[in-house]
Length: 510
Image 1: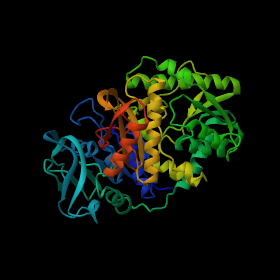
Image 2 (image 1 turned 180 degrees about the vertical axis):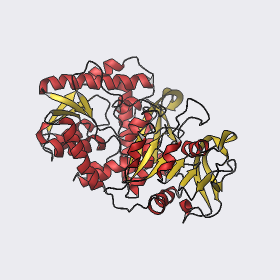
Image 3 (image 1 turned 30 degrees about the horizontal axis):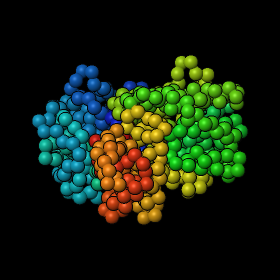
Image 4 (image 1 turned 120 degrees about the vertical axis):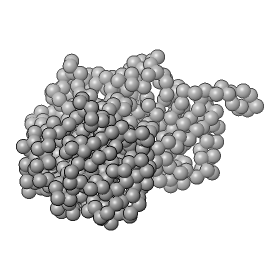
């Protein structure tokens, strides 16, 4: 029997991140909707339940709620943010709007000896994001921690194994968050750290075979980490019934189309049915005159589908379309009851007039570093597994405003310089790129007035791509990169560095 912890989704941005953190502790975890049938929680393999955060207020009638019966199952429950407030509210406590909202890094102070905080310093940094707070605890609960503006920032009922924290232990900003989740999984739920990524490969191969049967599958292969790992999984699951289509939409990094073909084409190391398509002129025509970022994303997504359908006609007989969609793509696109941040071209289902019967997305519940780990298990080379992330819409979301071939060329050249310098100086970054702002400003070039664009440099450190911190790039290197871009890339007279964290920003500019 595989032990597992269920993450119950109440609409938070970090629901799958919680499951992923539990899997980091080598305990299997998956996300269920808060409307999931109660009888399924009686499964003896379920050792604990975690309530996620969410954007609602528990005292509002329209907010997601759950019956008291779940607390009678005898399973340990941990509530996070909204989930903690829901436990308190459902069991007779009081939740009110806070006069002082806490957002970001906050000092948390323990009270007593709560098992959840074993091995955690008495005072530690946590990540808060709430406008409500628990003002009265339910009967049987005791306070186990506070912050400046939340007197009940943590509480628990040891007899019933119910725990609540107002902060988010799953995000990197909470320094000892992983330790807290491990305490919940090991000490409170009694789970053993036995789950490993190899188990996931076997499960996904079985799921793929059950979904597609003997049908052929057309994969949107970009050459990036996500689609490459998807290709490896599908190849292992269905063999020659997989057909990989690589679309050059004209929005790739410098020389990237050539590199992808060298890896996945006939002369490459993989035995794939590889179909390269140059559709750059088609995409630029569709994007002409469009500046709104959401509209650009939708156009790029629908244009991909158009190209795939045409290619499918040539291949013939493909019943399914496969995509390398990962969890951050889905959550930012407004998965389930989560708030929509921005659309991703590979999220949202199939258009009604499309010829494919369905979508295959084996990585849909994984984060980027989990995908990389999976790639290693599947035997992909490190050069591919550790490749820089690249958005599906490509440079279309790194050109603010209207996308033109001229603007894309500017970004390609600037980005190539950035990548060259970061590699030469061995800068550690999870993702870094150059983007073209829509700002033009006055400058001086060759003793003459210029009126050119500003390039924005972005470099972040993260392991889940749900939260991220800016990279501290040495000043001398930033000066060198700036000088090279301004001198070597026509149309640019200014270079800016974006050092905003995620949240509140996203990693891409659009």
